[in-house]
Length: 226
Image 1 (cartoon, one colour):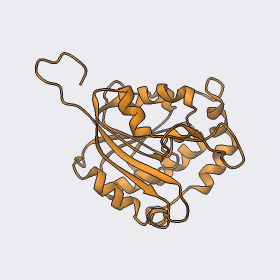
Image 2: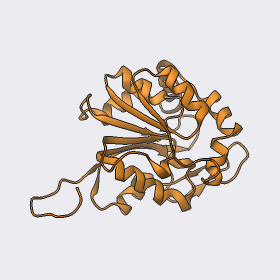
Image 3: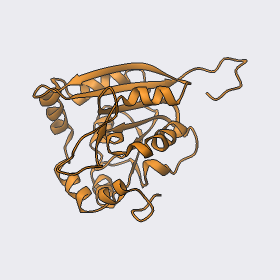
Image 4: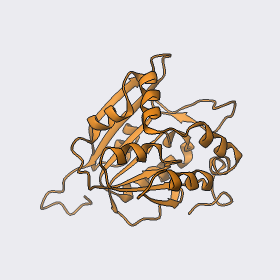
């Protein structure tokens, strides 16, 4: 686990009072989360999940990286997914997640040091997490997510054609947007894009992107990594 003392400047912010305030602002029941997505994009989170996860078995082992209080895991649980895991760096959020989402395996850990073996999960996903990873640390975060995924990587992140820093609640060095799907594809040639949707906000010109990536099948004579 990367602790506040060992981690990045972003780690220290998210494990302190700034992170607690974020958690208190962003705790939603599934119906509330769906309503938020509908206001923002004109489609619910549950409907987006159905589009992207229709081919994923409900028994698949799924890890959310940066699960906070488990908003997304609650929705997946209601959709019938049964083998759910979450890691979260902030102890306050993790305590709430454990009380809110039954039958999910939670661990305190950082995306920079995921405490699971290689290819341990069928699917690894983030939702609004990569945007808070500093550009100099992003490759390490992507490496860890890729390492732990056996088949799929799923993401929902702010989108921009190139890396762009955005001031976040009056602070610098806490939020960036870019083409995260492309960042994965450029770094890992054995990934292919299954699906991507750019979601424009109804109230402004900002865009988010949801994407699903899959490891390419290994041919019988291919000795490379799956």
